[in-house]
Image (cartoon, rainbow, N blue to C red):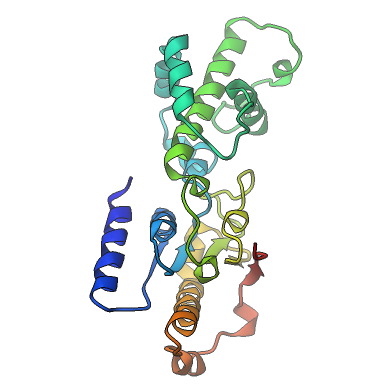
Length: 266
């Protein structure tokens, strides 16, 4: 687990014991995901504002642009070196909410390979044989091993970082999740929506922006989400309004407001 996760929990504990409140956590990109993990693991209501992150840290490294930074050939070689008994034992230790318990690892890997033929798998390869039942010898085995290695990598990362493997926040309504509609670093498609896991949270989507452009040009959206989360926290659990004057002094312009969706309460 990243050191920022433990630092966030220690900070929340120290602030609470020292009498400060309301408290909360926030971060951007991987920092946002660590903030979500810490906020979900905290045993009291707190503001949680993960920015430009989503349900799991596996997607950026297996499907996002960061996939090109992974040495897949090395992982494929190591994966192929495991014998059947070792693989069986490892698979029993891994739980990914994204895959059904009865789903074979290759079935998921095969589908991933078909969906992303020009990414990790390389340019110009033919995926028609994956469902044809026709063996193409070494070529098919290589594709199978690579697909399995990718899926196994995702399973390992999901085990450690998927928010479905962690507790829900004590009060999900204090969670304000900020994403960008064109984010190539943190893909949202193909994973369980965070709004499904944290019923009652607020999802604000920044339209027509990617990961980097949102950081550079939409920091006001992040700040507003933090403001709104802490204000709601103060009203619900402290009976005060901390930021009314700040909101009146600097209202958001309607033309730049992000799309907002509130997930249904349980």
